Image (cartoon, rainbow, N blue to C red; front, side, top):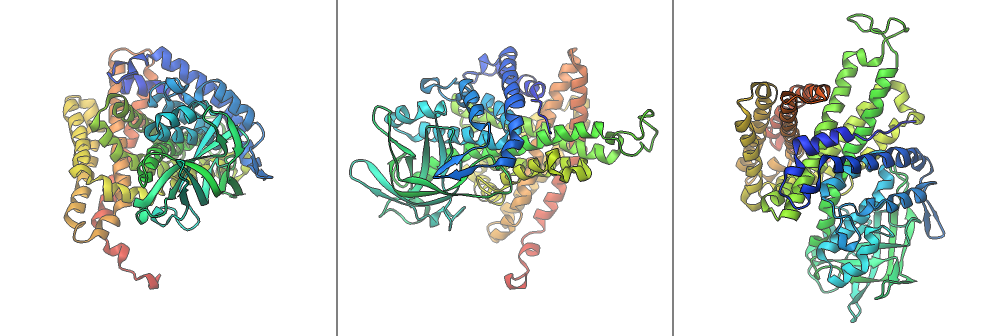
Length: 592
């Protein structure tokens, strides 16, 4: 059975050597001393490895069952959920006034990675609740916050987001669910939603659904969509649960992966609901959840790659196959371990350099969210808005690829269920699809985010890269292995942006055909930047006489691998982009 060990040492390095959190002027960051963050991460890691990880194969094998309208979660999930709730983990970064611990979003992200790596299906129950709570926090009235948030923060009540319908996914303008005003401030919600994660289960007293619906007489398309709070059980003004609402689970989907999470078809039959935010402004309110969810899904992609890599590495060190061509390394055994072979090393280095770079990229993104929300920094808000589709799309595409590569290390055993690698591949696959399929992320990046505020935010990113290179070009060790490759990647990214500017207006397909490559080009450049930042931190640690030189030497070697072997992919993506729309669009639809 696979195991999980939380990467607390690497997380501490990112928090304190790279981001230098306790030295930041972001409100709440001064409390993030190394001893404090270390204690939080150690406890979360223990829960992840000892409680959640052993339930991961259980959830995969047993799945969820719909019995008389109630979804039964896999054996052990309910008891584990109680442990997570008792530890206060569900409200780690939510406001203290509603029962949370008020820590920065960055700490919630670090803990979230551990929990998702150990058991993605399980962690989704609390993750979706966090997103729903954040939407109510951002758009709810004081009365709504007081009524719903305390029990959602504690996960006594869980939450969901309801967007998709049988006939519409990305194109929400086709949405049909209706919200009829009742004259007393409430609405009757009628319609069907599909693919609703954690839509029904037995681990919470109540489930608070956030549902997109149209009020009759409103504008057509997405401009006429509103967002509603629709609880499973009605709640009175004193916070007591009452009658069952007109909402039910009609079916559980049978899925490729994440079997431990209940993916439901939800039926709303004149269910009582309450407007969240403003009439016809539901998309704005929902995107509070969607943007958080997209970062969370990027985290899931990283998390599945991380645990798959951890187990593939252990297997490569233990499994004896063949002899090292340069000389026997295990003379007392019948063969050498897999890890001596260059192609296995390549495979593992691809994984290691992605996982460590992606973790730092994700933490940097969470840091930007804190800078935006806690310090009111508009530049940070613009930058994370630009990077959100990159974090979601690039990290999940690469995360899935790395889970597949980890499976490959096992050879035939990787295809056998008892080794567990199949589950990581299957669970990682959904991350490329839900919360906006990755093709949509690429379209959002190129079609909306690049030009946002006159291109101000992408220019700020280029300035950030340019500034980092200029500030550190006197460091010869950093320059040769990191700054030069980063400079070339940044040039490739700028050239791709220039191609879109010169060709996109007269032929929009020229930009859209290259959008997916651009998202990956951008992702590689971001990891090039973040690896350069980590290399700088490790060089400084070695120069100052660190007590753990091997950690930093390993970090530098891993970073050099990424810069030499992975980052040159930017040139390939640029070449594809510059080929324009013709190779993609020339073949008529009927000729396929």
